[in-house]
Image (cartoon, rainbow, N blue to C red; front, side, top):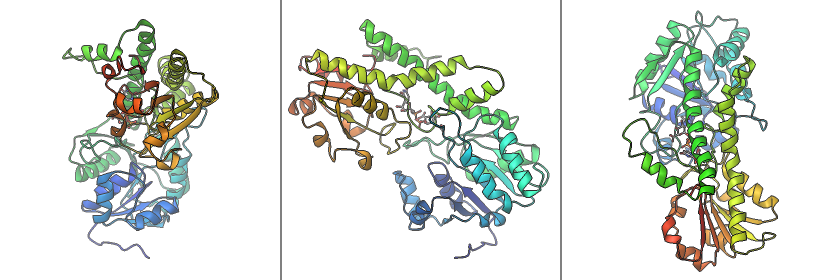
Length: 431
Ligand code: SAJ
């Protein structure tokens, strides 16, 4: 069906309709714009045409039903757009090197339709230099236009926090950078027209790219700090969670982070590698960021070793013992399993000839058990890898009913003192 042009509304095209692009498209469509969402995934587009999505977010599901959104796999509508926003993934390869192929492909797809006075905005998270050294050359070479003169280029890194009911695409403060002043001004004007949040102009594209990478690297190193403490305090018999809660009584200059079975998601465990690699290419080695990544990547193995230690303390043979891993998503109340620590825990246990059953109510397709009871049935040990509400309320009574001897609380989300004197061996991460 031909894309209808609302004469009185400027057209905004959003490339990439995932966790970032879809909420943004729905927000912009509620404002005074005609929005056309483009995605290369035909199945995703077919679902969206029926107002359906695999993203388990109540607001998105509701907005899809009420918001006019044209979606297509065809890039032609870009020629009708005033603004084109790139919201494609920026993952890493198995060797932890940045994978910019989705960004490059989006640029190659959009360039043929680029024309004068259009504004291209990148929202995907990238290392400094990507806008000017990767995106700009592709757009200029394939369109024979000049960035900053014929078309405009800006960066406004996304700050979506999946599963967060308070902070959403419309109220999270944003930073914006431009190739030059006109690009910056146009981008700020656009975000001012759609957001109810503060918008801060940053000096350059590189600095704007650096803001997001630094934000998420900051979180990764802080989590690594408490994860290293957890491994140390496990040896010392000190409850780290109590210690951190003590630290939080200091009313300034302490920001709590908590130990766990690992760092998952498409942001925190990924973004630091973009800076590590970019700096390496410029002869600087981020030893601290690299070490933090190594510590956090070690946590799934640490959790599996804790499980084996608990089985041995309970006098249970390891080989062919059944262990239930509860939780596959990387954080509570969402279905996203990207870079989830659960995969590392499962791999480590399986490598020790342990039979692993998995259950995650948000991820039925990847769960080996259809229910919590089925997962835990005949399990000698249970590992909680995600603090879903369905798991955090589990009491010793539930585990005793299933004759579970060992409980490994990978998210320190159970009430530890309830397990004392029950005969169950309870181990948390750092407590
Ligand atoms: N985690 C810990 N200990 C902590 C915090 C998190 O082990 O103290 C683990 C989580 O279990 C999870 C991983 O780290 O496996 C990432 O958790 P996250 O809360 O950082 O969740 P994300 O990945 O969804 O991060 C997003 C990010 N938002 C954007 O990149 C736009 C991040 O910048 C936010 O700080 C984060 O949400 C947030 O604060 O919730």
